[in-house]
Image 1 (cartoon, rainbow, N blue to C red):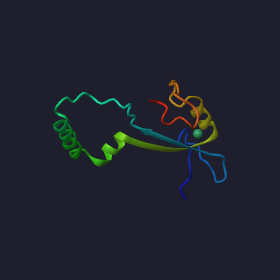
Image 2: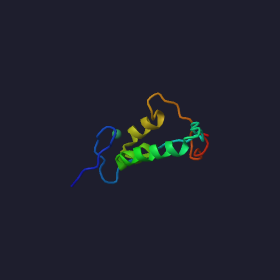
Image 3: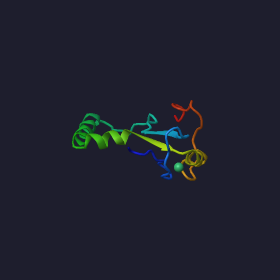
Image 4: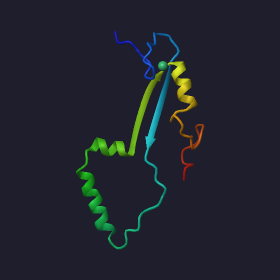
Length: 102
Ligand SMILES: [Zn+2]
């Protein structure tokens, strides 16, 4: 049977052991600013749509949103929680942060 291991350190996580799920969602932010397209809006939008048709659908989707799920032991969860980006500072902490960037 497949053994469950911590995605941080690789330690085996036996059945019934304390483990944590870390879900990370990254998504493109839009600040409401649109470039000045002048009089060629239709032309520029058609060019953009044409370029999108040539792109791989999966890559295009991942440019907009990408989710990650990790299973961690307590030690790795605590280390992650202390410094998720290894030196980066959180813009906001807590659960009520969506829609506050702009
Ligand atoms: Zn671990």
